[in-house]
Structure formats: structure tokens, C-alpha cells
Length: 205
Length: 205
DNA sequence: AAAAAAGATTGAATGAATTCATTTTTTAAG
DNA sequence: CTTAAAAAATGAATTCATTCAATCTTTTTT
Image 1 (cartoon, rainbow over the protein chains, first blue to last red):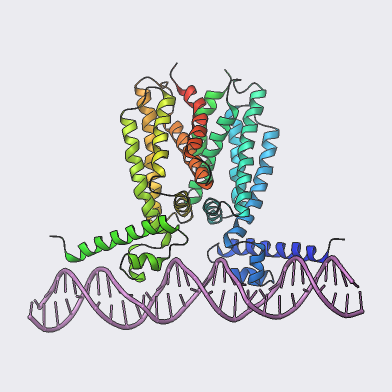
Image 2: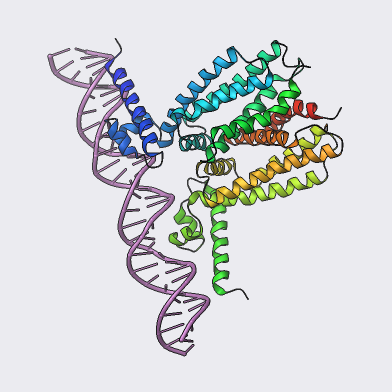
């Protein structure tokens, strides 16, 4: 059996994370007080800080769980991509974007992305950055698959193109999160337009 | 003559901005206390807040001045670009990156970018976003100029390509700012590699 | 040039994140 | 089963950004 200590630790950790995620969604990041998170998790403020370095850290942890989902959702597309470069990109990126707002508000995304930039050394920022890298890899993998299928011309530098596409879709998502009024569909349309020429250029003749 | 009030206002504003910029560089953003900034500017804490909405705002103001410089530096390249797509992009982007660390530390950039994402409605965040838009336009303008010169194929969607290039160089700069150890030359080399295939694809035959 | 109005400055008070010396709980040793 | 050592939890104290009612300065009006 797992030691009592380990079990209690896992349990408290979950209670804190759940309480925080819920409160962030209910009242927003700024208005959520550590004291309230701790109270809901039936834990003292000090204990909160034994589990998370600071307030930002737990938000990034929450958001990271969501990115894991996005990554998993992306796999279904990569495993079975539409048979045109443009269509495949649109499907994968659409999947990313659609998932993004299911559990998280734009404010939560903004804050999490901001923190991962500002305190890149905190443990959860590192995890977030790692997840970004995996998303980027996923885009490259998609292009590579299309190349193997003969849909992308053989000479293409898959990694370079993949990185550029990912950095673009990521930056566009940041802009999207910054503008409370911008709808998801508008974001998708803009990114599609940006991708179109590149997709055409790398498509096999 | 300008009214006394207007003169005093401009003077105080400058003193506050100078004090803040200096202190941020000396001790970093987090360790710089508003009280210290105010003291150096020979102004009360309350007055500081009459001039800037919050601590972040004055950092973004500092960084924005630097982006203005970067933009001006970019114009010299756009006005007289090297005569290959790859060379022109390398020159413009190199110019951006070289300027970026003259007066500002990576930490200052990180913090400013984080704030502009997190509080997009604050006045200086808007200014920062506007400057980013102008940088993006500058990249598009460069491509357009090359197109007029016959170096880029006529059908190219200049805006789409420009936006993608800019978003990529911007995101790469964020990554650069996140890794204290990553040297400027490495950043440039990575971005060049990413740009190369795109440059080749849009180059006129 | 005195009085009134408008505009700015001030710093003590507020509120929330974070720290840390103590206390409590769990595990390991005898 | 006690006891010592290690690990965690606790919450009062600290630190800093931010606010705001009171005060002072400049401008406008009479």
C-alpha cells in the first residue's frame, strides 16, 4: 500500500488544484484569493505554498491540463488527416482552437501565457513550454505525413515549415485572447487565409 | 509660452520615466519598488499613479520607446533592401534583433510582453500592440517592395506571408527572451533557417 | 488682486500575495 | 511501544502595489 503521507499529499494536491480551477472560472484569476482557494481546499494558506510556488503557478498548472487535452484531440487529426494540405491544416488548427475555450476563459489563457513568458523557470511554466513544443511537433508531424503521402513536395524542410505554421497559429491565438470580442470563427478565418499561400507553395505539383 | 502647469507635468513625467527605466535596468522589474521610483523622481507615490496606471504600465512605456527605435532602424533596411529575398529578410530581422538588447534586458522584454498580453486594455499595452502592428506592416512592406522589384513572384499574397513571417520572428523573440542563455546569434540562425524555405518558395523564378 | 474653481500632489490606509518560525503529524529506529 | 528524526501544515507577520480623502497650487473669473 502507498504510505499515508503520499496518499494525503496526492489528495491535498488535487483538492487545491480543483478548488483553484473552479474559483478561477467562477470569479476570474485576479479576483480569486489564495485564502479562498486554500479554504475551499480545506488547507491553510501556508500549505498552498508548499504545493505551488505562487498564484500564477497553479493557473499554469490548470491551463497545462487543458493543453494536454488539445494535444490529444490533435492526434485524432494527425492519425487520419484530410487529403489536402490546406484541409489538413485547417482541420488540425480548428481542432486546437475549438478545444481551447471549452473549460478556459480568454482571461485565463492570457494570464497563463503571460506567466509562462514572465517566469519561464517556474516548474509549471516549463511544463507549459514543453507542451507547446509538443504541439509544434504535432504540426510538423502532420506536414511530414502529408509529404509521405505525396501531397507535399519532397524537398520541403518539414521542420522549418512546421515551426513557422505553429508560431503563427500560436501568436494568432494570443491576439485572439487579447480581444474579448473577437469570435473563434474570425480567428480561424484569419489563420486559414495566412496559411493558404504557404499551403499552396508546399503542395506537391 | 507654455503654461506652468503643462511644463511641470512634462517635467515630472520625464523624471518618473527616467527613474523607472534606470531602476528597472539596475535591479530588475520585480525588485524595483514604486516607492523607490517615486523617490528618485522626487515625487510622491500618489503622483506616480497620476501619471501611470500601474507598475506594469511604466515598463511597457519604457519598452515602447525602444520599439519605436527598432521601427526606425527597420526603415533604413526597407528603404534600401538587399537584392535577394533571403538577404533582405535577414537584414531586416537582424536589425530588429540587434537593436532589441541595447537598452533593455531580456527580463524587461519578457515582463513587457507578458503585461501587454495580460492587460491588453491598459493604454500602454495598446500602444505596444499598435507598434507590433507597425512592425508587421514593415515586414509586409519589405516583401511588397521586393515584389515590385521583380524578386518575389507576382501572385504572392504579400500580407499573408508578411504576417506569418512577423508572427514567427516575434514568437521566436519571445522564446529567446525566455532563455537567458540563448545568444542573439543563435536566435538569428534559427529564424534564418525557418525563413529560408519560405523565401525560396516566394522568390520569382 | 481677491475669490472661486479646477487640477494636482500627498502619504497614510487598505488589501492581497508571500514568507517563515512554530507546531503537528507521520515515519523509522531501537 | 517509545522515542527520535524527517516531513508537512499552520497562520500571524511582512512586504508592496494600489487607493483615496485631505491639502496645496495653478488658473480663471469677477
